[in-house]
Image (cartoon, helix red, strand yellow):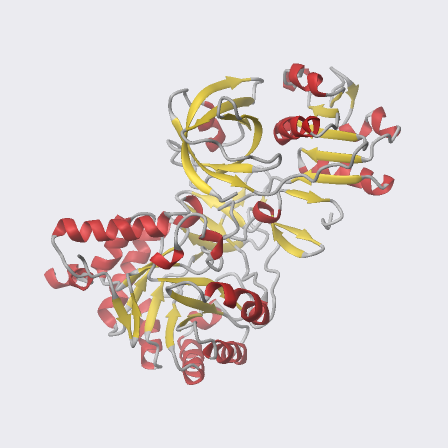
Amino acid sequence: MAKRTDDFKIIENKRITDDLFILELAGNEMLPEFKPGQFVQVRVDGSPGTFLRRPMSIHDVDYERNTFKLLIQTAGQGSITLSCATPGNTLNLVYPLGNTFSDPQAGQRVLLVGGGVGVAPLLFLAKHLLSIGCKPDWLLGFRNKERIIDLHEYRGLGQVFLTTEDGSVGEQGYVTNHSVLAESRYDRIYCCGPDPMMKAVAAYCRKNGIFCEVSLENLMACGFGICLCCIVCTVRGNLCTCTEGPVFNITDLKW
Amino acid sequence: MVNLGFSIGNLHFKNPVLTASGTCGFGPELDDFFDVSRLGGIVVKGTTMEPREGHLYPRMAETPSGMLNAVGLQNKGIDYFEKSLYPVISKYNTNVIVNVNGNNIEDYVALTERLDKLEKIPAIELNISCPNVKKGGMIFGTNLDSAREVTRAVRAAYSKILIVKLSPNVTNIVDFARVVEEEGADSVSLVNTFLAMAIDVSGMKPSLSTVTGGLSGPAIKPIALRMVWQVARAVKIPVMGMGGIMTWSDAIEFILAGATAVQVGTATFIDPQAPVKVLEGIESYLVQKGFTDIKEIVGYINRRV
């Protein structure tokens, strides 16, 4: 799929927690076939301090309505400006960017591990997995009860296990502390979240010989392989997260 | 029709817009967004004799109206370039220019000799201004004797068009332009990035793994413009202007100041079509102003002063 740049109309801007919101965007032309794990580069207009685009992974796609969603965390000026975007206005995107997750083999047991805004690419992935006959489980970590997103849709796709750092919901601790991992019943884990979480999950998978892919969120300038800024150190040398990733098999990473 | 073409020595460029090294990959990275052959030329990623991994992450930081980079000349080396990249990029119907780097004069000369043999590479850009390497790079470009020496050695080894890319991190950039002109450079391109830094306040550490990096983007444009104006008045060889060009209007400023051509760099990170939009804008501007040849406006402000 060729990369391109276009304006998209903002259909909805929905706040889902104190620091997370979902933008639903509609294309003027028919959407290309997006793949789970792929991302877009969003130009943030109206934020003088935001010079570069912001990479955002594709959260969900509705081909019938020709729309897709971005799940965004307010962190700096760029995302705060985006959080104020009003329906009817447009967003300029470079898309679709990056690679995708590999498909599991038939009958493999799959776990999706996400932390905070890291669930963004996993919802789209879960829907894809179901479409190829794989029903995943979820292991989701949040800081506390207030940070948990509405999990209704997630529960509809697979069984959900939860952790919170303060124990206010689910098991207390980090995702790697959850009892479901102690049972080691999965063949394949897909993970996206903060770096320390992904590194801990990668360590768990290495120890237990579990196939694992992680979706990285490195700082980027361009998003399509010309600036060489978003590199990750791999067994194949320094690779661009934007073109060789953002999804990497942990056996490639020098973590 | 407007004539946008110009020449450096015997090398014709169909228009004055090129991509800047380090901001266009090797060209194919931009194929999805526009036809690279529409440009006057592309200056591909800095190349060295040996493969280089570049610096550790993080090597980029966003700054007000700009960004810092400390990529450190990551590239796969000349062997890979000749074998895997050259066959692909030599198909472009435009001037493909290689940005040449080395640790020492012998490196620069060895690489130059290899490139001299590549038929479809009509010019090199001698990079004596990379602020992100410990050896070579800016060390040559911030000392007049070294700049002279490396230019002389490369000139002797290279039969085609030699462009020297100057560093702005000097007291008087004009002196450097004059020295490389004396040593036989066919053109100078300026400016490379400004040595700069940023600090992550919450983490209480430098934003870049290397502490310092090169600043690019609109933040540097007024300084780059001033330097291009100074150099263009001081040398006879054509000047390629760059530094924070985001729009056609920015490019026109450089041309009015005396640049024969411009290179679009960091802008492409934000708008992958920036180089071709700059080109279209320059053409429209000339039509609107009633000029028939871009040469009529090169250094225009100097004629009126």
